[in-house]
Image 1 (tube, rainbow, N blue to C red):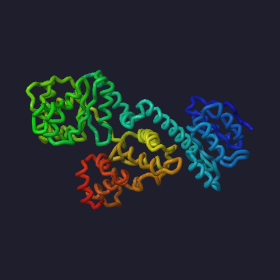
Image 2 (image 1 turned 60 degrees about the vertical axis):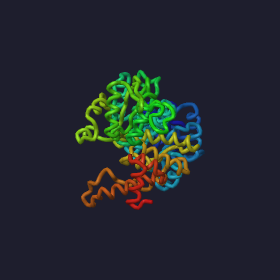
Image 3 (image 1 turned 90 degrees about the vertical axis):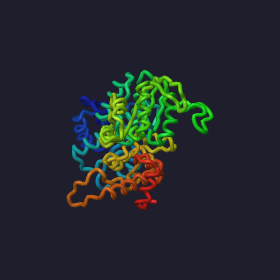
Length: 460
């Protein structure tokens, strides 16, 4: 029996298909959901509901577990074959909770236990719809960014990231130098790439250089190049990275790590718009846009004499501050699903989603390593997952217990900074599977420093 074939609510937020052999339940659910603005179609016959699902598109399926002709688990299986993106919520009595748990393992979003309240219905349906929209946004993100892992880090729906996108759009068409600030893992290089791709020199090269990677002598050779015979072993003339970036953008990452001696030489190159190769006498004219980045407080470094004030002002014509991931709200869920799709493809896996408890852990974590840490956590989860959904046990075991952001409980002793550092390094080594290069990257330190800390804390 069909109570309604084509039903529409006012100002609909999404389309919901409700299937239950109890007419009273159908009536109650219709009233609750239509009041929230959903378009609702209700069926007491699950077989006929599948016929509608083949013809029309729905966001949510709300189904009873025990029904004649076709039970909720069978309906779930067939509905998912017809509409893989459909979010399913199972309705069940307390005596049948085991069946509801089984449904979630098979891909249902959640379950509603009878008797349920209108508030429970509203909450679960709204969360399921939000999840569906987030997954679709993540898929669109993959298309927009050419399925690039890096592209996702400069896109988000949070107000903070919308503001970042606005600033990038404003400054990209100019040729002024830009200083990008933000913690390690927030996506500073990716913001630099976004500036480059939206600039007038987008057809030119984008050249990235990490100022923390080399000593002053090697850095000079890398940035400025050398003439043939400039030093022992210089058998040929070599153009530096500043020349290689001609007509494009050079990205100077970790600019705060640049030695003072090199800062003087870089400043001259930027002021004169020319570069002199090591051992050379003829300057080469430069037409390069400079985007620099740092996780340090460069203004404080200037005050302490660790960074040249004149270079600071030369680089900081326009500044861009990237927010911490923990400040970006719903972007955590969006990026989690983005990385889920990315690592599914890389590992040739078919993990369909992240269950509510696992997502709760992901969204409540502080992410000291920012987006880079989230990517590592999701990669690990996809590798470990043996079901359709990522669950709590696929996440790092200490994700719920590592609390670095708050120590406000008066009944607990505040840990020392050394204990915190040990705990966090141990956590990062866990989520990276002990790969020290990746752990050092998340921690924002070099591998030698990480090795020393591992020895210090006995974490071998």
